[in-house]
Image (cartoon, rainbow, N blue to C red; front, side):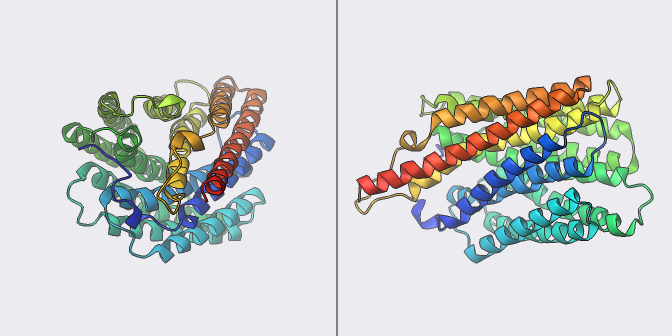
Amino acid sequence: MIIDPSQNAAGRLLPPDIPFRFFGTAIFFHILAWAVLALNAQSADGLSWPVLAALHLITLGVLAMVAAGASFQLLPVATKRAVRAPVLCRVTYWLMTGGVALFAVGLLFNLPVLVAVGGGLAALGLLVMAILLVDNLMGVEDMPIVTGHAWIAALSLVAVEVLGGLLAINLALGFLDNRSSLMLAHGILAAFGFMGMLAQGFSTILLPMFALSFAPSQRLGKGALLCNGLGLLFAVTGALIEEPSLLALGGLLGMCGMGILAWSLAATYRKRMRKRTGFFFLPIWIGVAAGPLAILCGLAALFDLFANAGALFIWMLVVGWLLTFLMGVLQRIMPFLASMHSATPNGRTPLLSQLMAEGWAKAHFALHLTAVLCVGAGFLFGSVLLVRIGALSGLAGALSFAGYGVELFTRVRRFRLENA
C-alpha cells in the first residue's frame, strides 16, 4: 500500500497552532542550546552544569518537542484516527516548555530546586504525550512495526521519568552513593528507548509518506523491532548491574536493528513514486547512517579504546544521530503541514516546492554537519578550540533553520494574499 498523506486527512488535522507552537519552540531551544555550548565549550569527559544544560535543551527542548508536535499531527493522519482531546496537546506543550526552561536555568545557575521542579513539569508533559500516543495507537492492527516501537518508547519514557526523578531529587538531597549506573541507564532509555524508538518507528511512516512509496517490509520491520527491543533490554540491564558484556551485546543488537530498518527503508525509497525528492532527504539519510556510528563510539567508550570516547559517544548519539535526523524530518514536516492548512476557499493549496526555502535548508545542513564534525574532532583530539568553532557553526546553523521557518511562513502568507 502506498502511503499518501493527503488522502482524507482534513478531518484529522489539528488546529495549526498546536503542531507549530511545538516546532517554533523547538527552533528557539535549538538556538539557545548551541549558544550555551559555544559559551561553555569543553573537550574532556565529564559534563559541567552548563554543558548538561545544553544537552537537555537539545534532548528535551528540541528532540522531544519536535517528536510531540510531529506525532500529535502525523500519527493520526497515518492511523486514520483523530486525536480525541486536542486540549491535552496544549497542556503537554505548556508543561514541557515551562519544565525545560526551568530545568535549563536550574542547571545553568546550579539551582537544584529549579532542576527538580522543571524536571517534574517536563516529565508530566511527556507523560501526557505518551498517554495521547498510546490512545491513538490502541486498536491499530495494520501497523505492527510502528506500534511496537511506540510501545517500547512509551515504556522507556516511564522508566526515564522514574530514573530522572531520582537523579533530580538526588541533586537536592544527595542520597545516592553511586549514581553513575543510574545515569547511564537513564541516558540509554532516553536516547535509544524513547527518542530512538520513536524515530525508528515513525520513520517507517514518514519516509514512505514524503516519498509517496510503499510501506516497508513487515518481515524486515519485525526483525528490526526484535533486535531493537532485545538490544535495549540488554543494554539497560548491563548499565544497572554494571556488566560490560551485556552492554556490548545490547549495542550490537541495536546496530543490527538499525541496519535492518535502514535496509528496508532504502528498498522502499527506491520504489517511490515521487522521483525528484531534491536535497531534502539528504539530512534524513545522514541521520540514519549516524545511528550505528554512535553505537560504535559507545562500544569504544565501554572498552576505553581512546581518550574522551564517552564524550564522543554522547555527541554522536544526541547530535550526530537524533538531532540530524529529526531536524531533517522537521524541514519536511513544516511545509507539508503548512500546505495542508493553507487551502483557499476554492480548494487550492500551495505546492511543497513553493514553500520550501532550499537555500536556508542547505545552509543549515552544511553548518550543522560542520558542527558535528568539528565538535567530534574536538573531543577526539582534546581541543577546546575545535569544540567552540563547532558550537559556533551549530549556532549559525540553528539561526539558518530559524530563517527557513520565517521564509516558510512568508511564502504561505504571500500565497494566501495572491489567492484570496
